[in-house]
Length: 256
Figure 1: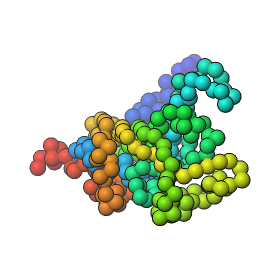
Figure 2 (figure 1 turned 120 degrees about the horizontal axis):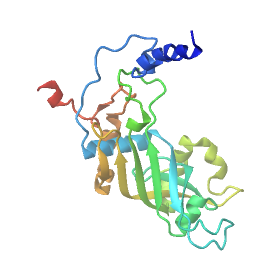
Figure 3 (figure 1 turned 180 degrees about the vertical axis):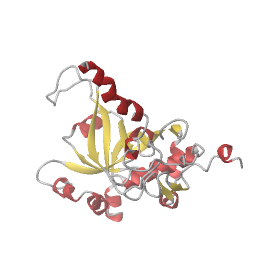
């Protein structure tokens, strides 16, 4: 027997099993397809985004380098280029829809912002590690999970608000290690700020089951704490989420 004749035999099991989700290889394949649901509305999608904002505490903030670099050592050709960097944030009162930031003045994000750049704040949903198993191979696919960007500008908190709303306590509750660089530290100048959200772009996942588009800032601001709490995303309560932020069962599939 020629050695090459073994190649098709070796590949055959993989060719046969390739369309099957790997998670089924050592378990019974599902008999029931995932339930069909209508695409969430724009407001339901806004609730999803506000839920994600509450659940997470680390975002990517993107800014644009200014053209001149008089006080900074950097390549001469990066003026006008965008840079995205990780930043801590927290959802603190009085405006939880405008993320609270601990701004370190020497950081590129806040130097660019001070030079006039707008700020794009990007988040995506991370399902919990103890999420339930799903028959849908795309239920927890990052490509099918919601993500969004908040576009706005950074402004400092008023001193009266810092004391009235315990902003430092709120932020350090989410990021205790940030105690080291909070305002008044001996390392770098820092200050409490917040992203004033001007525009919201939401990408809910695959287009046949998720809403994609711009959310009006008025809608973003109007979402209540009760609406956020009533929203459970994929993995929080079953594989498809529940509550007031997911699409209703698709009547065109159920025949109702």
